[in-house]
Amino acid sequence: MVKIMQSRAGWYLLSVLVILIDQSTKYWASASLVYGRAVELLPMLNLTLLHNWGAAFSFLSDAGGWQRWFFTGIALAVSVFIVLWMARLTPGKTLLGIALALVLGGALGNLLDRVFLGYVVDFIDVHYLNYHWPAFNVADSAITVGAILLIIESLCHRDQSHEGEN
Image 1 (cartoon, rainbow, N blue to C red):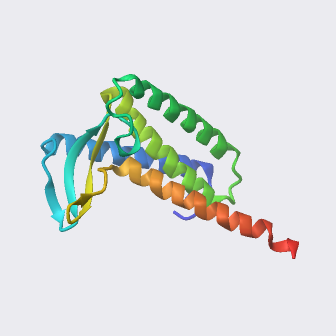
Image 2 (cartoon, rainbow, N blue to C red):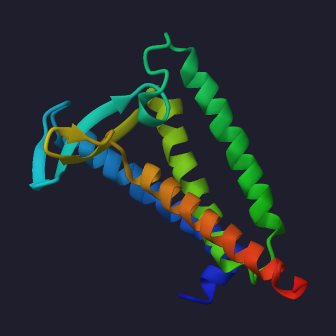
């Protein structure tokens, strides 16, 4: 398993896996949960089916409909950029490949919702007392983890590039 994550094929496979898990959990949430009604799993974790018509944190959700195609275009452009970036990576760039694969899978998972539904299905509701973090989904989680890994990789790469300067 470790060996496959060091190759382009493994990175693209990870993206496909993220999409499959994301879409299947969104399908389950849409079929099983009542819109807007919280189901408590843990004291700080609910499942609550919501539809996000905008971007992250429902940004532009009430903009009148044009945002669907705007965010679709951005997701397509970012996805193409990431696919091309991944195609140029050398097999030794494992952390970067995994990070890009997670972002790509998440972007495409949410893109599928936007194209076929007009909104993104969210259902994970983390809260503390009366404060609720904006609901999210598996694709959002993959994008977040991928972005964190990109930051870590860039910091490690930066440190390596300055090692010989002293």
